[in-house]
Image (cartoon, rainbow, N blue to C red; front, side, top):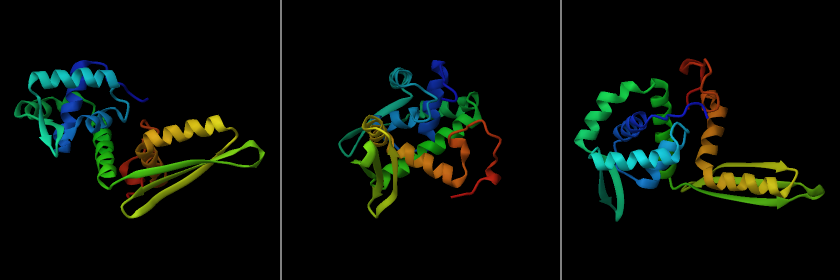
Length: 193
């Protein structure tokens, strides 16, 4: 974890900033996942601040396709615009980039498969696939020395496949900031995807 926002005001500004820049209503689970995915905000802190923002009238609940969704009110938009400078620019940009990647991943009908295969010599192969409407777009496997380790890796992939895919793509494209946010790489030094 590179940086964790602890101050409730900063967390609220962070949530407002993301909602303002995403510009579409989001269901609670998606909003939660977007806010906590880069580990700038803890889960409980998000929940507490989110409900306070709703009570303050900065976030409104609407129904979309039979589901509760959340977006900014006029007051929330004003606050997001006025207060965004209080957050570090690098945090804002990284979080927004991650959020847009997450939403794109979701929109494309993402699904995953994973299986553990027993090999000779007591080893196990974990095979992981990411698919969308067009078919398999990522497939990888890893061999580990025991079943317990393979099961832990499988559980993590099943729970966080979009982050694993994003990490692989970041590494392959040269965007080492995904794992090392304090590097001196500039956008010009990285391959653009």
